[in-house]
Image 1 (cartoon, rainbow, N blue to C red):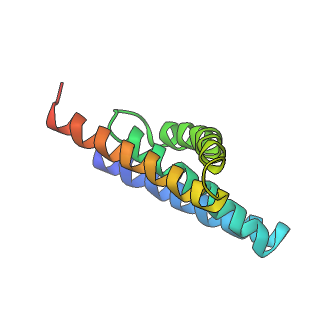
Image 2 (cartoon, rainbow, N blue to C red):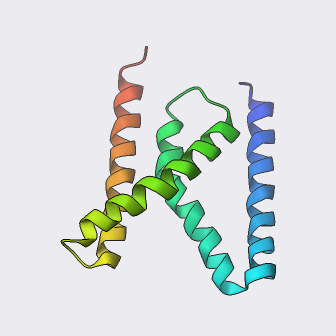
Image 3 (cartoon, rainbow, N blue to C red):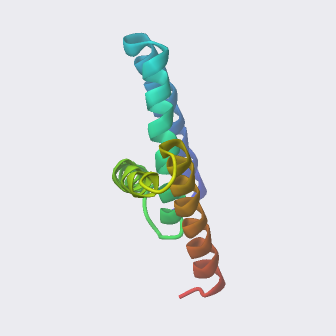
Length: 112
């Protein structure tokens, strides 16, 4: 993927993010904006994980949204059985982000 295509893809992603923020705020108010931002935040560890692979930007966005919505709340529930649920959410997010960071760092140190 060349640099121009990458800039265009990230530009489209930025426009989609801003449009999503405006739409969710207009339709649902501040609560909708918070929900949209939480969906984006939940998908960040998986987007970082998929950045280690040679994938298109939109593929990374869709897969990270799907995994972020399913895996982080599942792990937060399991951790929430032992700790308070708010702590479980933070711990599960940090575990996935730390795991993605370790994977990306290890993959970059051992190129194919």
